[in-house]
Each structure stands twice: as C-alpha cells, then as structure tokens.
Length: 321
Image (cartoon, rainbow, N blue to C red; front, side, top):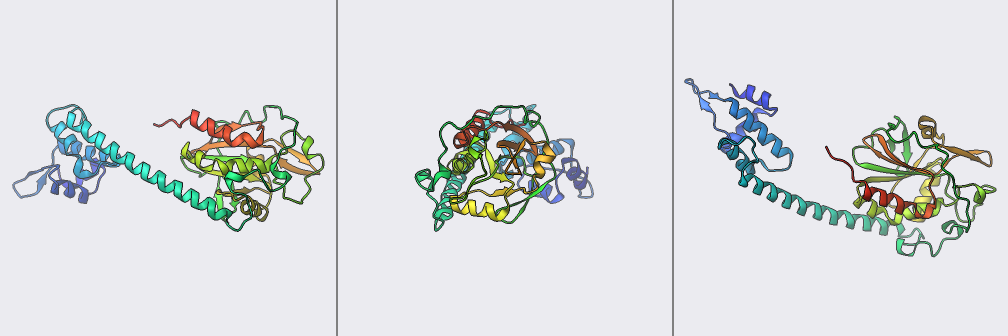
C-alpha cells in the first residue's frame, strides 16, 4: 500500500510515517518503480507507535515494543524489554508529577501570601483569632434536617448557565471540564459592622458562611491534592460584594455570583426566605464532566465542612476508564 493509505488507516500524518522510517522503526518494501510499499504489519506497528506516544512514551523509545511484535508476540508488551520500558516511563512521569506538584504548592503559597498582603485578613494559620463575630459560630445553633431537597441532584447535568466570577469572567457551569469542581453554595456572607437578617441565628443552617469560606481557604491546597480541579463559592450576592469577601478573607479561589438564583431554578435547589429575600440553602456540589457526582446536604457545622469535602474526595478517588 502507498504511504497515504497507511497514514489514513493508522490515523497519523504522512510526515509522521516518514519520521518513523527515519528512526528505523518501520521499513517498507520497494516497488519496481522505487515507490515505498507498506504491508499490513506496518499498519499495526504505526498504530502501536501512536498509542504508546499518546501515553507519553517518546516515539524513539517505542522500539522494544515493536521488536516484541516482530519477534512474534501477540502483544507489544509481552516481552521483558517492553515491561522495562513501561517502568522507565512511569518513573519519569512520577518525577514530573512530583516536580509539578512542588511548583503548584509554591504557586498556591505565593497566591495566599499575595491575597493577604495589604488586605487586613488573618493568614490561614491565624484564622479565627481575629475579625469579629462573623468568624465565630454561636453555641447551640439549630441543626438543619435533611428534607430530601437535594436527593435528586447526583447524576444531574449542570445547566448551560454562565455566572460571573470575581475575576470578571463568565463561567459556564456545563463546561467545567473532566476534573472535579467543588462548588459550595451558601446564603450570604456577613460583613463586620453589618447586621445579619433578623432572626438569622434561629434559621437552621443559615449562620456560618464566613467560617465556611475560611475553611475552604485553609484547606484549598489539600483539596487540590485530593483531586479537586477547582473550588468555587457561590451565592446570590453581587460580584462587588463577593470581591470584598475575597479580599477581606484572603480567598485563593474565585467566587460566583447568581443574583437571580438561576442555578436554583434550573436544578431545583433548596432555598429559603429571610427579611423578604430569597436565598440559597447551604449545600455543596462536586461536579465532574458537567455532571453532579455528589451533593452535600444539609451542611453542618459549616466551619467543619471543608474537612468533610476533603475526606469525601480522599475516600472516593475518581474512576478512570
């Protein structure tokens, strides 16, 4: 067969085929007119090279697998040399992951330092020691009961709803990607010197938005290491209000604003009224591939919730296919 047919059947470019030839990985025959003539075995070899390369094995290091096939093995990794090549690739990938993890940890640390610099917010290690009553939960708060209002959520697709984040970008909730996104949803965050709605402490599950945000702040790196790709806080407060919270508390993640409670209407999320205003009830969604994988509801106590999410992530690693 001609090079164009081989490339089509193996789903590669003709340039790639010529490169494989230059490395001596495939050796076509020659016709009387000098044209290359490829056999069915070459299709198999090129497909094997492509599959291994997609796994991160450099093309030039696929030779042990191809030699294994040439020796008559049914599979390219039936030979000891192939297994050794796997181990070498895994070792190199592990080193890269460790290096990237170290870089990510440094970036997160720098982000937290920069977020606190000049903001007046207490650093994570000192959180809870200053900042007023909003950081401290009153004793004997009423515990919210599970009324089943979130039981329908696992397995539900996120709606094509775009919400503005505190970085000024519109975030489409149905395109969050394959990595887990943690969205903790809450009624409203109080500000020092600002009164909360009347009877706030007596509403089950209402009090505690600021301590909850601080918990996700302090465990942000732990959540990423446990498999979360992103973390968002979400409420019906406007973006300017959310920006003040991000700066004051030194949050290393963005907040989402949903003033119209569109997400509640699309998904049937539980809400309540306080001082004539409709608000989200507190719950947390774990989203993967645009589908709600898990819903935490009710959430209590809010200051411990980030640890609850972290424990769930560690106990439920994502299934791979």
